[in-house]
Image (cartoon, rainbow, N blue to C red; front, side, top):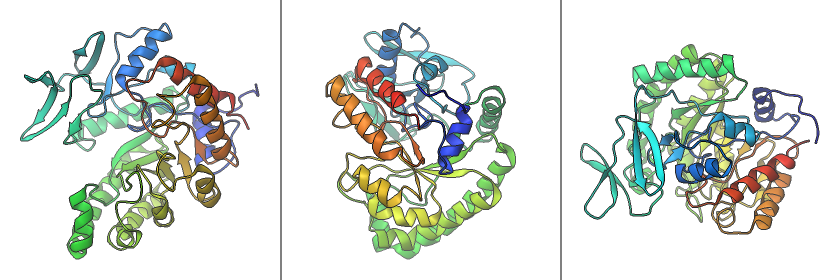
Length: 379
């Protein structure tokens, strides 16, 4: 094995600047879409002989875990979640052997059908019997911009920067698209009204971005925005509509970030989004995630050859839809090696699956994927 010569943060920083590091960086759980279900994570920790009594829910909708540093070290991970610890925790036992810790204010309730329900005002989300995540309204555990939580996040980012060599990023910005069916329809039938709202939103986001740059300093390497623009088969918005209605505001936001900091702009967008990539690159998106290579028109070779010099691919390292949870260990290893060999050349690639690891994926499958990635990570 080639000797590692860089710190974790240096390795990721080189990669996202399209320079070749000592090896390809590896991520598990830095972002809410690069993680692992708490169910699979508890099983994984038990399989590895690690304690499993403090498995923490990081995302209360997808039920992903805060990945601990012992697991990061086992899988040679270079990135870490930026989220302050809660002041108080409670335990939640959704079923059987599975018991997790959650912030005290997160309180799922079981209904008469045995389903778990989370309510807020008149909204709710539901996890069916035997489920692994919630459906319905997206009721986040916290507001990234609530004053006290934001300052706690700054303090946590400073701690990570000064006490560790992990790379981390801040999650909490928006790509100026309301990513639901009604929102996409409004972009077509009421473009002027949507653009007016985007202009209002831009002023608000630029104020937040200025505050962010002032307080966050060099503690993070990227700012993350999330907005799913693709279905399994195509973009959910025509490129010409997105270019007119949303792109000008997204570009102005990205320009502000790049003028006032060294942060990269990381966009999470699921699905078949290849026709939108030229517009996103023009707007200033530096990193795209999760690279859903299982979607139509998202062939890895095409993506790398066509866009690899202009955007960093963060994900797409193993097919979570068709391989990771259902194929043999040999097939998983082959899938990872093929994808790493496709995306890694020339830099500009961070390994993680093409979305979160689901709750029913066996530990050996996860170990095989990450061990194969590390084995093939060196340049």
